Image 1 (cartoon, rainbow, N blue to C red):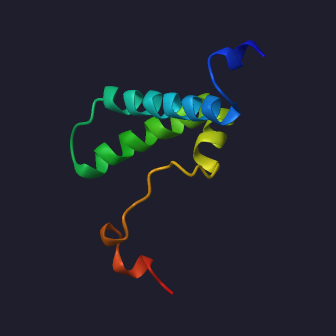
Image 2: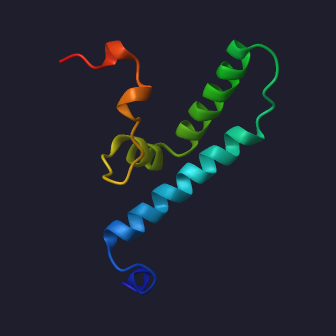
Length: 86
């Protein structure tokens, strides 16, 4: 129960954990040496993403598999037109 001296509720705790994990992933990818073609840079970035996932499987599952109301959403006008099938 001591954790709730720092967080008002479970949702605030999980939101902080999620934000911290996104920051860890961002830092990991920023530290990569991205050189060469766009394809090479993409492959190196995705390898960092996979390395992160394998090092923290349960955290990764929660952070990337759970629906969160405050999560960033792509604006409709930025998405490809064929993505909006009705």
